[in-house]
Figure 1 (cartoon, rainbow, N blue to C red):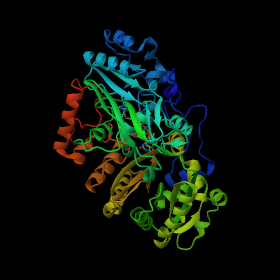
Figure 2 (cartoon, rainbow, N blue to C red; figure 1 turned 90 degrees about the horizontal axis):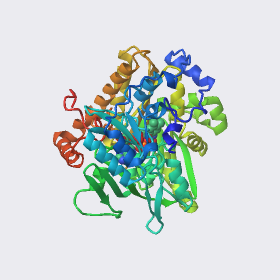
Figure 3 (cartoon, helix red, strand yellow; figure 1 turned 90 degrees about the vertical axis):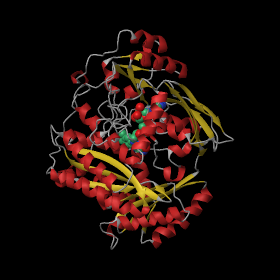
Figure 4 (cartoon, rainbow, N blue to C red; figure 1 turned 135 degrees about the vertical axis):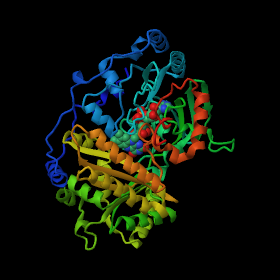
Length: 552
Ligand SMILES: Cc1cc2nc3c(=O)[nH]c(=O)nc-3n(C[C@H](O)[C@H](O)[C@H](O)COP(=O)(O)OP(=O)(O)OC[C@H]3O[C@@H](n4cnc5c(N)ncnc54)[C@H](O)[C@@H]3O)c2cc1C
């Protein structure tokens, strides 16, 4: 039984028996900053959730049952509701309100590539849309079961294809089935003293197939590389047949087909195997906190590190608002005491920006790199805060989505978006997008808090990750979200940033794909799709802008 997606709350994050509450000082802070009443509003009960009758064509069901077995074609309420959306703000607002009218007609669980082949054949012949479902943690509408004119839609849950298939210790590579989740990846590799080093905030639930399909980035990707840098071999089952790309360290055999399939978001086919580069487990992790007087000063220090060859494995610089919010939500007083954060009193750094820089590796290497690297932030104006802020960040690194549920409970809109640009244009992008979000919120008469951090460094640039909080407009939550999302995305496009650094395109960013890759680029991608998926069954409504989209 693939209990995985069923175990996750369908209206939020984590399992229902272990809710995370906001501490009283955080509630006080939200009341005073956003003016929200903070009265809890619980999500709808499962029995109240609105679902359409399953509409799988009668002739299709026996074919699917023949392909995977009766037990693995499911259409019970809980299974359909759990597969009706991902974990973005829009998804959670709809699910909390009991709206699963877009749920799939059935959820199908193939056990291997052979069963998957039979499922895709059945769906292609009967005009059924197929939505690959890994951990279901997409925040851009990537797993929304859109029919787009098809007779029905199934969610294709890959939880039964969740094995570590093999490790090549000499080459330091490992082969995975697509449905294996983060903790199991690390557990399985850990037995051989290895790590993938891929730790997105969604690590607990996201899968290898989902990471590869979305070009995911982890919290240590500055050092380990984003998933696209870790992929060396791939197998993909498409409606037109199999594509097998064996693991090789490098190849000059024409354009990079591996890279075309990485980030394909289920619209071309299903990733059934991925061979990924792994590393020896680090003996030690040294995370150090720094304080900068401004975001710009901190960004300058990170650039110096990256370009000076002292690349940290983890780097995270919060702007002034995020620094202030972090301290307020963790309880500034207690945090200061617990972590020894005397920096709040550092003269000249009052409203400053906190930064965590981490080095991992063998004891001597990490111990040597960290202090040498420390000279650069100091030279750039930073003040060292020692190891405590790093430890504190490490402890809380997966807590964000749990707190988001608690914020939604209290009527607070909590949304994130991300982009990236070259160093020379990063600050302009930072200001432009931040201003657009603030103005969009103000135009609706809502006070808002807009925060940002840099978390992935490259020699030529970095990513920006925004979080914004505002009181929810009750009854108009999705309109409110749409206005802010469009303003932020238009601002990203106008400042020349990418529409997404690691969340992918899905449904929410599709309208900006034309600006991102141009008319001909889109036509080339559509031609590839037409060859691999002639019936257009694979994840419709994702990645490509709708032909009649005003923005497309
Ligand atoms: C709280 C939270 C924090 C997050 N933090 C990060 C982060 O730090 N870094 C980051 O990169 N992302 C992050 N994300 C986004 C999300 O977790 C990633 O996009 C992740 O890679 C999705 O993995 P998944 O297994 O859940 O895929 P799903 O959500 O199930 O699917 C994502 C997309 O990939 C397709 N897909 C899934 N499996 C396959 C397959 N085997 N073959 C073909 N297509 C497939 C789906 O159809 C869909 O389009 C976060 C999301 C949440 C909710």
